[in-house]
Length: 156
Image 1 (cartoon, helix red, strand yellow):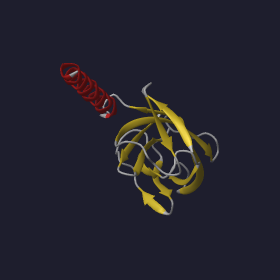
Image 2 (spheres, rainbow, N blue to C red):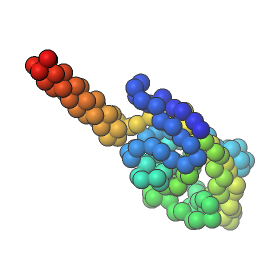
Image 3 (tube, helix red, strand yellow):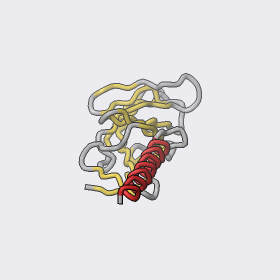
């Protein structure tokens, strides 16, 4: 079990799998394997919907045309610039073995890599509804407490 501070007020608990609220986050990610020359952009964008987490992995090259994660094939989601893939992430606390095909050599090569996510670095993005939802819940609780105390004083 991993406990991570969130927004200064709340804590998220990440057992195996996902218990995060729906929304968009950033997470630090590192890449190992291959020749050591490739890299991925960090932090990566992480989208949570239900119990599914999807990471936006942006490579340091435009020469990647395929990624394989847990036996499933993923194609780039962009046509220009460095290669970008949307891939599933089951558990931020475990290294994720992936394969990526590069066309930078004379013929395509599938290369083994490992993506490591830093679960402690997860933060909601500015467009994520999480801070707004948290603020709205706190506001409703505060108003309810004031109304309850006001009624109690009038009766007593």
